[in-house]
Length: 381
Image (cartoon, rainbow, N blue to C red; front, side, top):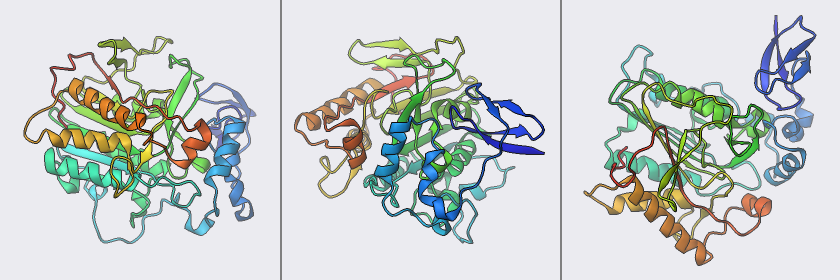
């Protein structure tokens, strides 16, 4: 019989054989006594963040717990629930596993953390705006787009860790030459120490599902393994990530330095290659790995939006029938965000200001699975 273990070093959960006295964590190789994970009682539900994040430092973990916990949600209404409710509206997850997937598919994830004290107010608008861009400009059909938000009635579409990972698997499953895939994420992002020496800066980048204090974050290594590594020849993937510390969230080997006008080698120092299976992967991130991103109403007085998402959509839509290259898109986005930043418009969300201070700087970043001429290749989803 197998047991579930939580590593004492990296806090990642894994399965071990019950009769082994000591087991090694497959993620950080630390040795652990073979003690199964104990489920917390309802009386201690407010403390479930103490052992759950994937290696948040003790002080950072305590800050996050205090900042994110307003009135702790009752266990019976926890958004981490993954049981499918009886809901009549079908989504792409209901399609038969034998069906040929559509050649344009997307997973759009907006996490607002609405049950916590410091929620993000712009993520739902971000997802709606991105969905509109995909359907109206790039020909994606609504039934081939999965939207994960806390507003969803179907519990499979709540942005929990398990649900996000499941939908990412759906995105790439059955991919064929000519397919165009999009993963969009708007929410909190964090960094954690890298234990396997595959990060040049010594940190893994992560995204934070709505239940990350309990189930842990989704790290860049896992995102790469799920949606980048299996990409077959002829398949194109775009990830657009509006989160703090999102620069190399896909672990792609090439990062474009716009100031120098050249590609920077981002291959792991361990020598491990982070390649696709022949396909092309692109990532447009809200900021570099050591920067934070703003959730703001400065760019649209009527609603809250992620600054990067709002600017990207505005720049692309402004071209109407004309195409735009990756270089032009990146240049225009950075220019508009910097203008707003200089005017003091980007104050950021409450949690970012409290954790990282009021001076937010963000420069959108482009990374890719291959080098290419950014002012010649057209941006096309």
